[in-house]
Amino acid sequence: MTEAMTELSEMLRRLDVTVRPSRYVFAETPHGGGGAIASAEAVVVEEESTTLVLTEHAAAAHGLDSGPRFSWLTLTVHSSLEAVGLTAAFSTALAVEGISCNVLAGHRHDHLLVPVADADRAVAVLRGLSAPGGR
Image (cartoon, rainbow, N blue to C red):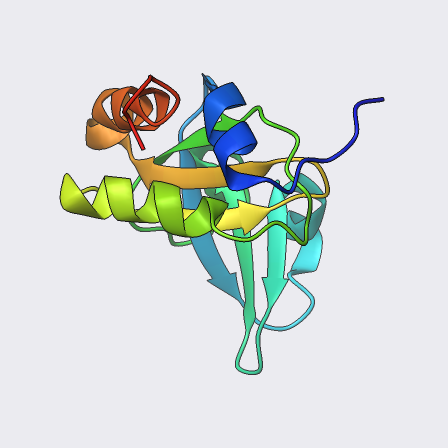
């Protein structure tokens, strides 16, 4: 197991991106999520409702209304949950290029959901952060 990184310059230097093959949607459900929660890739419980992130096929199978389609990008650098600056660095770089980004943090990696149409550009922007002078 690799140790989680906290130094921003090291995280940026080692940053790479993978893209999951499916398209993803955000679906809002009443609290509990019903049977769809078992198909969810991520769950966020808010005061008003529960948000599920699912593949578009899983959302359709459960009859859930969903909006835009997103690509799921994973930053493969093992960043610490206490690291400072990584989210600011990648979100700023994407914002400069006009790319919307919804962020989920896992224990080892950050996951970004970006509009499908912007996925290739987002990958290029993120990989550019690890290039010399790319920060």
